[in-house]
Image 1: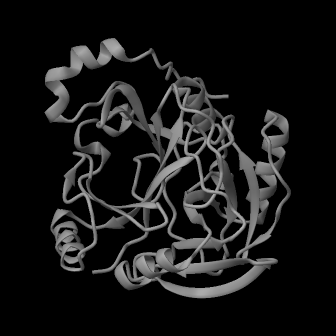
Image 2: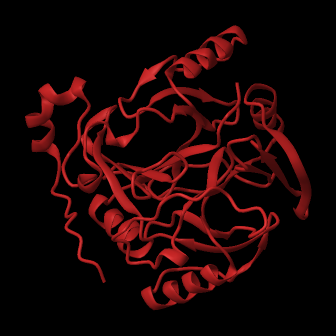
Length: 324
């Protein structure tokens, strides 16, 4: 069994409509599924990605209107990145952020890549990462109505960063259970170490970065923070093999969970990081045509009998798109 890469990242927002505006109109991602949090049916779960919401392109948001501001700290997924084609695309994004008054840093080198750090309107920590033209990742298919030109468009997720005070439990889970391997270790500041882990296989060159920072306080999760990261497996049969495997190892887990658009397994490491394994199949075209993705509220069949009650609780989300 081999992980096929990063499947998605799920984060928290307190403002669904403003979140929609930022991720579609500023970042140029497509809202590929407008659904609800299956564990709290009164709030949205929004999925953004490429033209079809392919695995590896998605960032999703749970709407939590009463959530406090996320306090960055240990035991957190501390940064999410998006890949673009090259350094010229990075410069485009820097100019776009200046024009749109988006908080951002300078283009610099981090973990072997040129990156541009920025934040969304709730302080979500994000990066644009330039691919190496000689070792580029497989591209997604940019949204055809994106305000961002295709040559500069985000084409998939980049490295995910995790911050911990003690790296050993997290590294053990990622390497001995999930099969990743450390490809580089470096001291980035005094007493602060970066570990780059790769899922390199025939399917992916995706990386997870673990930052050891013993000075960190523990995270207080909230809006502007990440809930979990998911890694790709092919189908439900392969996922069931993972369920059996982690049970054999005696690792506490969620068991097999059916999310309809994909099936999942959740494991939380001793540092509090929540990891998900999610299937590539069946995907978001199971209940909507490609040209209609994200336009109406999508509910899995096991929630359809509650549609009236669910829709009554949701505030309107303006998803009318007018290309710039």
